[in-house]
Length: 184
Image (tube, rainbow, N blue to C red):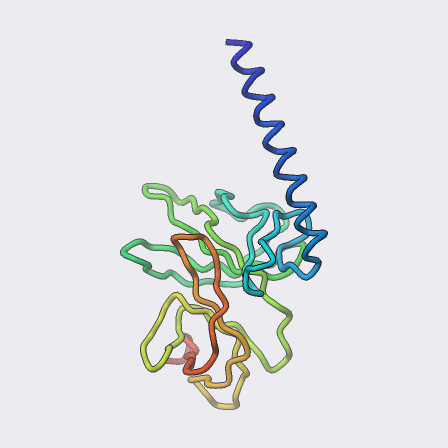
């Protein structure tokens, strides 16, 4: 039994070393990667804005230390419930796609997106955007605030979550409009 534990520890240590080394090499190749410092980087062929990193797989009821909630939304994707959780981390603002664990208050981070800095006249809207006139709750978008508007048509950047592959894909902004869920 002791030998099995020792072999398991050695295997885990080797795997962590390989992951750390490969992440460092990828960061050196792609200095513009959007993943947070210390996170495994996405290949340079990934679209900008796709984040994979240190919080993927984290289980949380309360948020991890140093992370605070900025809001969120519950979404149904392919019959399963997920949440978009907007968080502030020590390395910046992010949106997590959390899977809800059945029979538990725990959530598991399935995808993460580093949110670019927002201008004073911008805001991030989640799960309330239309694409070509049809609601697509998987879409998040940075919109430009317009005075007295409840529907925003000036979209700076947009992503659609891919729950199966655990990522946020950048999508074209043409045809996207978002509503403020607090005013509709």
